[in-house]
Amino acid sequence: MPIKHILVVDDSPTERHFLSELLTRNGYAVSTADSAEAALQLARKNPPQLILMDVVMPGQNGFQATREISRDPATCAVPVIICSSKQQETDRIWGLRQGARDYLVKPVDPERLLQRIATLSRTGT
Image 1 (cartoon, rainbow, N blue to C red):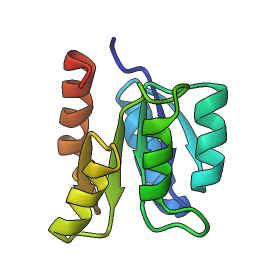
Image 2: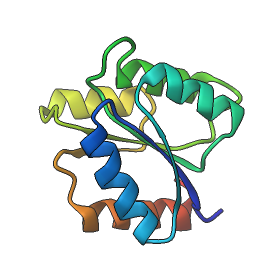
Image 3: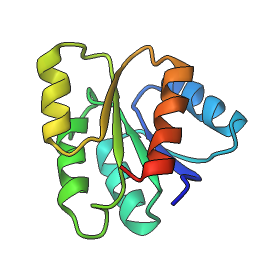
């Protein structure tokens, strides 16, 4: 199924704006959340077709939220791409073990992100 609606989750207003503008310019409908808790509520109420998840946020972190999304029957079909400033290989592996489909390091390369979204849209994985 083609990806049309993306939820951007980041506590940084600048990062949310950057990603939202990039995605909107490229034809995607975008919702935003400034915390993992808000993202979980939005994802359950109106599941997006993709979630871009920050890791370091107050309260619940992105790893915990990704694990919850991937295990919840209401949201487990929604792929998550983690977009984080945490750039250690162990962080990437941990994110993937929590259920993320991909892990990109900030600052996110716009072309790389759009390619990953297009690949998920085509393959569904």
